[in-house]
Length: 198
Image 1 (cartoon, rainbow, N blue to C red):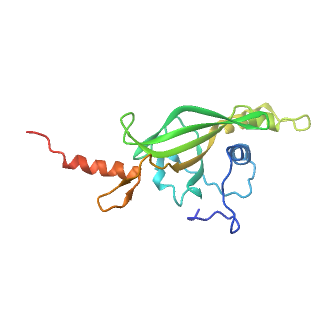
Image 2 (tube, rainbow, N blue to C red):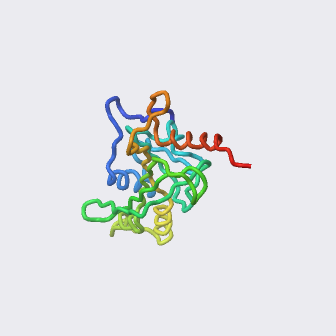
Image 3 (cartoon, one colour):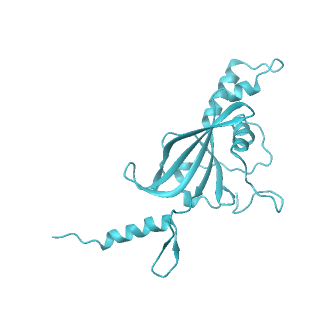
């Protein structure tokens, strides 16, 4: 997928709700159904730090969207994603269809990493959503196909990643505004200047 390429007509912007991400995109991906427009790429999260998403993930405003495989270990080359203890139910009508989990990116090795301002919302389908949506009196599936569909629903997640704004604005010596990530890297430079007593 090329940078900025979304295959959407001019003037259209990609800004889906939580429900649309789960019902229209994630549900169709997990059920192996076509999704039009097919614009959200699949990324291996282990090989991609959040600042590398530009040109790899679908960008919609300040957000990046992508599918990835569900995994317990969310480490990258330069850090890791750590969940915060908040899970939100995603509903369609009066039915719970998914979960939204929030994670923060830390630079360094767990658990001593340095917190950044990168945030990821991770969307999961609830168990049984695909099998209950696809089961009806007229369409009978074998137990094997139902179990494959259930396994597929647990395999995929869809992610929305963004860089949150800092609580306070920070400036470098030359008056240029710094992001929180810039501050992290500058703090590493300060470590080189520290001299230990002999």
